[in-house]
Amino acid sequence: MWDFKKIQKPKPWKHTEPITRTQLMQMRDEFWDTAPHYGGQKEIWDALRAAAEADLTLAQTIVESAGVIVQSADLTICYDERGARYELPKYVLSEPTNLI
Image (cartoon, rainbow, N blue to C red):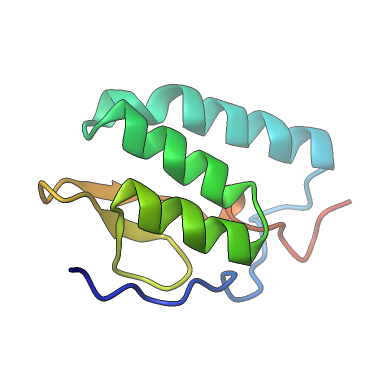
């Protein structure tokens, strides 16, 4: 049985330049569309997306039921049970402080 880390939101962060909510959503969609091409299992990517878009309690349940091993509590680095690495950029996990 894996020891599950308690998930938390990433620390506040700033994008290189102020961006709008629409731009943020486009960046997120692009990331999730291309992420499975970098390796790993599609089911795990789907679970990570669902977790990234959920509140923390639900996110915890999603990653645990998918068997995701959370390396960084903010979900930026995770592994699946086969050892494949999944890296999530902060912009899919929280909003920048300079959102306009």
